[in-house]
Image 1 (cartoon, rainbow, N blue to C red):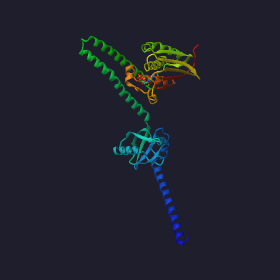
Image 2: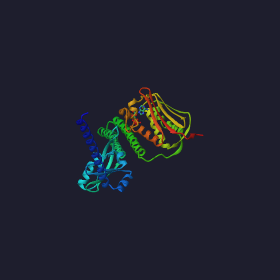
Image 3: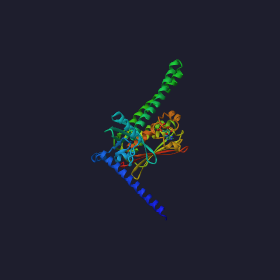
Image 4: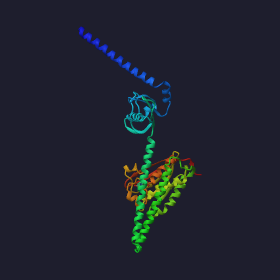
Length: 370
Ligand code: ADP
């Protein structure tokens, strides 16, 4: 190796070491500056908070942030800030007043969005305090509530519009007694549907209200089935459907008699409505490994796989015209799901188009009836 090469190597090594030392010194100085900006006590207080807390600097970086702030995705460990927080801080500084906003944060490799509520308070010309809280659930609930309100008004409009049209037609043809009679019958049918719809809207709002509406008593599930089958006799007869109760055991469950009757009635009504004339509908009950297993089995039209995932949603109908003609509201299965959830049970469906459907409710069985 020549002397020039040696010299070049030594100079390179010295330069590298110098650059390394300089970057270390700069990082150290930055840390020291940040430390003097945020006293130790303040850091301790902010670190102990459940909310995300960030001290925002003028250069759109964090002088300090606690662990919840990183977990919310509004800061990174290297001090980088979510642009939404930095923008809000600039607005707060410009107004010299507290400012708040909801920021959408995309987290993880799946990029699932969450909504974070951020409030920024300017502390000085150089520092502002940002407090962040996860608001995703409240936002989702608000969206669901708004969607529900839109759906309800849409669903109510149809029967109300039909009633108004029918009444108008009668008004225009008062002397046509046959038509008046036929339209009066239709008005009665629409009113019945409207009453059912309003009752179910009230019921689903109550069930989804958040708090438990279950009046817990020990009750006989076989008794529930017997009551439902008795009540559904006329509906079954009108379609010549053979409704059978196949009660193999008589388990007692803890729950609300009226709510469970409503849920099972909805399943049995559907089984009859979506069956062809003269078909069989069976309601069976047995006990399996401590669970009371109630099945409503029909050999009706069945449900496509894609629809099976959606039928428990409010107002979802596979065939809206058929549902309306059978007096359906699209709320029946949603009520079933919520009643069962309130009883800490499960409900699922097996179905095949053209073969039939089986809806199964599982509840914890306490003991057998004596
Ligand atoms: P609906 O009042 O329209 O019956 P539900 O919530 O009870 O509303 O049911 C939702 C949809 O699921 C129905 O519109 C229907 O398309 C389908 N469905 C429910 N039960 C059955 C069944 N036993 N057989 C076939 N389809 C059914």
